[in-house]
Length: 239
Image (cartoon, rainbow, N blue to C red):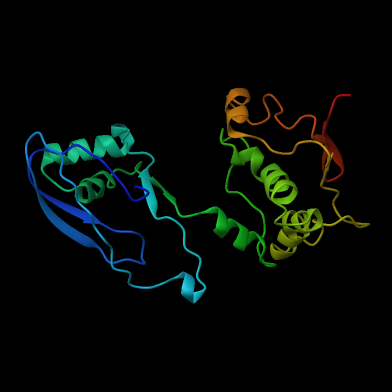
């Protein structure tokens, strides 16, 4: 996965290079003969199959890297090394490793332009698949990031729009009739925060403060003043 220019070391001799870029371009295959002790320059121009932008489609990067691989604890570099040792392609190597039930991967298919387009759609809500104790920034930082980065700094949304996407809209979508709005007779699930203070939780700060749980060091203390669930106070900031 490269921005367009790439330098690598390969064994001397015949080499087949395959290059692709998402679903918009045709796979290109080039054979070169690498001379010992020399640098071989190769320029490859990809043939476009379809123009997503012209059709009004939103497309992100197709960058994929390995996440887990059971006892092998694989990285792309380790996988390529093992593939060479076995005399197989990197794709075949990954297929073999994928048979391990603990194998997984992370696919990066989002770019900022996509996020802006998505969030500005009236039917898109703010959510996260992160658990509260999964030791990941999204576990406690999804909503502060939207409020701090996309509302206040980038102004993609107004504050009322963002709050609606986090509260009444998902409650209505999930059929939670007694939650999501401030109204007599409804459950009082509330987060009281100061909009004039920083809302963002940066990844480095999260990693330095939250070794086991996002709330071990209360990383949002100072921004969140109080939290209520069904009317019961779970957190109140110290003066």
